[in-house]
Image (cartoon, rainbow, N blue to C red; front, side):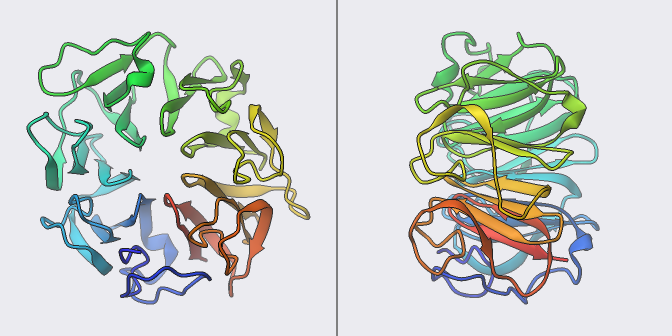
Length: 340
């Protein structure tokens, strides 16, 4: 829907579709990318930013609110990192400055009187310093500073008990400052997943489905390659190629049949010993093997697992693609694979 694939139409695609009209010739020209509720962003090595898809809240940053069915240039911002939420977006440049655009219904990117930000706009935070990473929950934005401090902007009542609102007059802002330096962050619907400098993963927020784990998970920080979160499940990828998932499992989000789990369980893919990349959507996931094969699992209402049907996929299923893949990415209900 919404033209999020950039193929010139707004219909759902039940099987993988080739996108020929892209703003680059080779994947190595891509510096960063992000997928949201229904929009896709591509940042190139030369600084240009492109986007397509759902744009009802200005989340494409094109100074209008019409959907865009083919990749169009947004501007030249030199972003080195991108993030996309349900209907909101963010980018970080080489100077560590944060730019935001899209919906501000929950005061996640601007002062309360602002409802839409139609073009990338620099955001000032309550402290100085360089921004390292941004991740979006459904109604909030988490901003990780290079110093290890974590700010949470927007509707984040799941943090009420321990993290009061900071005395800012323009936004709903909370500061997570009691865990020591944070190295990485991933955002769920109403929970946060944090990699700490103390070599452990901890979670904050609602734990109805075990998405916050029973206890911290020990891991050497430098051994973790990627931290991910869906709405109510989370996961990580280690440098040795191991994937572990935990949380809700009503659609097979954990890549196996059965109940939810509050402990990280290893993802088993028959014939695959090592995974090179993962991404989690709202309730589905994708993994890339070192051989370039793509595997999907979980919620499949929009055929986002590439199976040509809409039945949930409880164990990882290989997606038939014509060539080996180098990168994978999940939006809320769709999946992208970049050919080598």
